[in-house]
Image 1: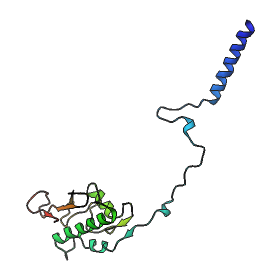
Image 2: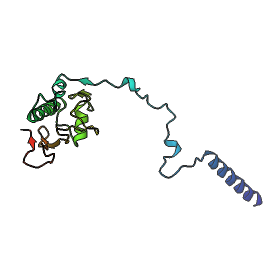
Image 3: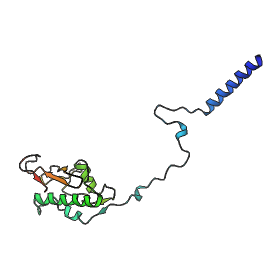
Image 4: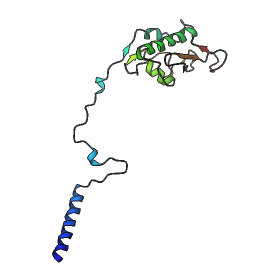
Length: 167
């Protein structure tokens, strides 16, 4: 009987030792060690491999935004044209707030197509499209393919009589 008790104690000690040798502690929220793959991580693309932006010919028109050669209405028409081209090529309006729409028009889109030049007097320091008075444009999606663009006008306040709106 004593031999059986000793055998059970020794077997239990061996089981505990084997458990401790294979045990790897985890922190809360961390996956267990078995979840880590021993395979090499997937190859990451170097920044040099990122496709370059393609500046579309229509971007030349956008370079004239807020110039003295254009009227405020011309500026709105140019922007509406850029958004329209974007929608036809990429299958719908750019989405988001002014800065996100601007980024999409400047090439941050699935095809890396730039409908606007990378800089100009039409951008503020936050990367938003601005009218000739320095006020960010307001973009209002009317549908998946139609966008209303609004300049606050001379008074720099949206929703007043002097606002300039795309057709």
